[in-house]
Structures are given as C-alpha cells and as structure tokens.
Amino acid sequence: MVGDWDSLDPRLLDWLREVGAERYRHPTEKDKTDSELAVDVVAERGFRLAYLLGGLGGRLDHELANLLLPRYAADRGVELRVVAGGTLVQLVRGRVELDARVGDWVSLFSLRPESLGIFTGGLKFPLVDGSLTLGSTLGVSNEVTQEPAWVEVTHGELLAVRVRRPRPRGRGG
Image (cartoon, rainbow, N blue to C red; front, top):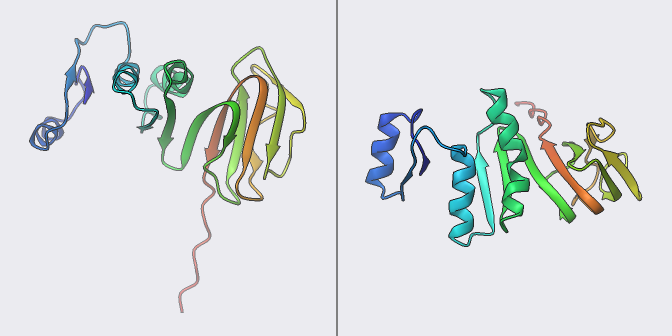
C-alpha cells in the first residue's frame, strides 16, 4: 500500500491492515503521484515485473501520467504494465511479445520524436522497417490476426496499447 491514502475507503484500509499489507504512507503534498511512488518501491524491492491495475479513467492528468509510467519504470529496471478493464499498456524497447489474442486491437505510439526500424508480427497491417513519429496516429487500431503478436523497435521506444475485442456470446440451446 503506497501513497497518501486521501481517497482510500477506510474499510479497504482496515482490510489491508488485517491481511498484513506493507504500508508506505506519504504526505498529501508531495512531488510524485502515488503511482510513481509505488513504482519506486517496486524497483527498490527488486521486482522486475509489475502491474498497475486501474489508474485509467477519472482525472485526465493522472490518466496521462499513468500511461507514461511504464517508461519511468523501465528506466528503473521494472517492466510495468498498466491494466484497466480490457486495456493493457506496455512499453516497447527492443522486441516485445504482446499480451493479445486474435481479434484484439493494438495501437502503437512513438514516445520519441521519431522511432525507427519498427517490425511487427501477427498484425493485420504489418510494419516492416517502419517508422512512427510522436503525435502520429498511423499506429492506431491495428488488429491481431495471429498469436503471438509482437513488436520490435530498433531506434526509439513505443507505447503499445492492447484493447480486448469483446467475444461474441455463444448461443444457448
């Protein structure tokens, strides 16, 4: 449990105490968000993979900060995946296998002025030695056609956003 706990339900706080959750309480007025402080704790504890559950929706400024947090985490040796509902956000440096299944949408965004040498596999619209620029929408709404889907970037870094496509419901009989 990391943060200032200003928006934490008291019943949840009581439950977390009962189950023995580690607690790292910070003042409300601070220079980092609770999520960034949590990444710091994860990195200090030596974890290499972490998930931020929720964190999307609500205040746009916090949502944007949380979407960029995988980059901050990677600089500290942690692969952070942001998960909210059917959306998963992860950083791509080098080659990354996507947690995606056939039919899911995948969007790629450059986090640098230009990311070069982009290759993809298992996507409807493949990139072969492609490039993306910061702010471009070229990488939006691709579709997974084969598993495992993957992305590789040679120069730069990308944010990969996977959105689960709802599965059709089976017919009752």
